[in-house]
Image (cartoon, rainbow, N blue to C red; front, side, top):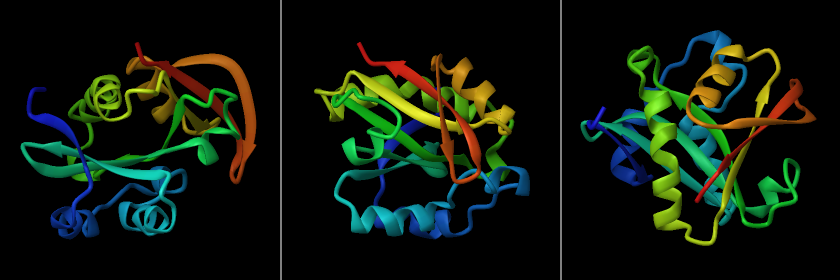
Length: 159
């Protein structure tokens, strides 16, 4: 999977991201990239990241600072992973898992003070739970109530 990389969002990715599609069972749990980008423009603590396959945007997520983290963790040296998705035409190829495996090195390079990534994943979103756990996240037992019900809080330590 050496063809997969992570990069900060650039305007040159906007066209591909505007054509992003997700199955209904996934879109209920995440934001489309352009929706998430609007929030990033209004919040300097939100960093939009593009998952590239051979240089082409195939996925997207946001790393959110303390104002996002504090609902999920007391660790002020953590980032919240949110709005994670892989475009439907690229699903089933291991890109989600591989991009999560690239995340610690990316965070260490660009956010050297960060020692943890946290996320909330809906209780009903078993596919995403599986991907995050296979990617190295751990369930430490914390639960919160989100907009669409109970969420598991997962943690990934950055060494």
